[in-house]
View 1 (cartoon, rainbow, N blue to C red):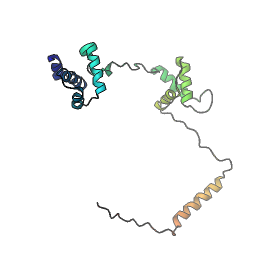
View 2: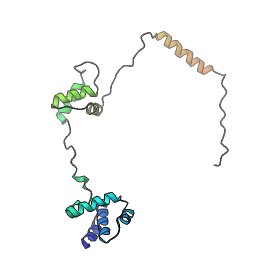
View 3: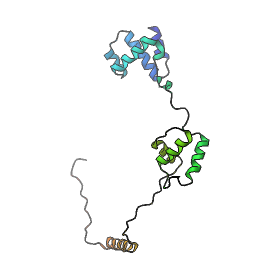
View 4: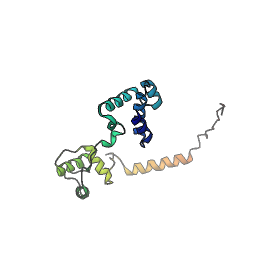
Length: 175
């Protein structure tokens, strides 16, 4: 029990300190409900801590997320990213514009394994590329009619005197 108290008092990391505190309070005979109220941990999590402590001792206490192994190396190294940059300077082999699927297919060919569309889109954004697709035009549109409409609209908005200005009223509520 003294080891638990010493561990609690000497712990510098907050998670480790709280874990020591939980085990120490339980060892002193305090109920799980009272320990949960004092520490803010749920009863089920306290049971998890006790289970790990009873099974393996002090090594299970503390923040174990540091042991999680993430992906340590990126999908493309610097040379492969440079190759992708060069490929993006030209139109794609299938034609059209570069998009997430086309970049993912290009990367998959390069590294020899499937790559998701999302990952292709992420690389496209990382390299500051955007889809530059022209806006569709109506087949029966006339530039002259559009110019006339714009002129008519701006003239109307300047000379429209039929509308009265809105009067803003204050609320009579407390304030």
